[in-house]
Image (cartoon, rainbow, N blue to C red; front, side, top):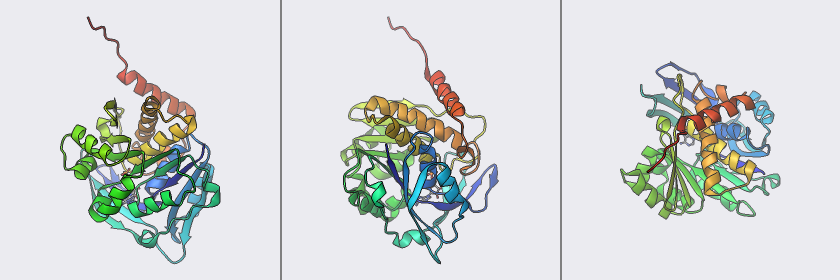
Amino acid sequence: MSLVVVGTVAFDAIETPFGKTDKIVGGAATYSGISASYFTKKINLVSVVGEDFPASMFDEFKKHHISTEGLQVKKGQKTFFWSGRYHVDMNTRDTLDTQLNVLLDFDPILPDSYQDCEFLMLGNLSPSVQKTVVERMNKRPKLIVMDTMNFWMDTQWDALMETISMIDVLTINDAEARQLTKEYSLVKAAQKILAMGPKYLVIKKGEHGTLLFHEDQVFFAPALPLEDVFDPTGAGDTFAGGFIGYLAQTRDISFENMKRGIIYGSAMASFCVEKFGLERILDLSQGELDERVQEFVDLVQFDIELV
Ligand code: AMP
């Protein structure tokens, strides 16, 4: 079933304790779209880049059956740029620079061929643009998943609240859930966020796993203990792409299936962090993915008899 992915397509410059990159291709929609492509074959991208964006990346999108009809290229302008530095524990990072560039006056286009979409991923982007995309769909998709970050909480609070009230699943990290609700307890934070509109909430806790909340139910999935973590950039977006890609493939949006979606998303994210940028998720095989998912199953499986 078709999936529309909205978000940044970007240049990133990343510093981790293991090294440093120059400008490499990144962006929320890039990570989410590529990740979702391992599950569903009809992906439609909505974003904007500048003239400086490499043409080779369009081939990469095509290879992953991602339509770029809705990816605008702005002549004479520069692509969105983000730079970040990770701390030694790799769970926290500082944003060093955010240059909105083409995002400053981004007016999203939804080509006719995108209109039948049943699944919508509102990847990290200005909440007012995310809202415009929802409004420009002729029919409300069956499931809208949204991601956001502290940058938008700091700069577009009202628009963020409005967009959050329109969606089905919010995915954010633990620090952002706390910032959004001013609650330290993630259980209390979840209650407050679910009262803002979303029916489901995914809280990502980096190497400490993921929580899924719905009404009074909670599900927890661990992150895989990995030997090598080089660069966590894009892990959240890769997770979200795997999650919604799996739901779109199975067309089942029950809580039970979302649990499986969380595991597939977590498996994709575990690959993402193993190398810098997009490198590790560009050429995965089905065998590698199956093996990784099996590792998750083995990690949490145990028998217990209660007397
Ligand atoms: P993640 O590590 O999953 O939080 O996502 C990192 C990606 O988000 C990078 O590739 C950045 O280009 C992108 N990014 C950073 N800041 C923003 C922002 N304010 N809005 C949208 N995308 C962003």
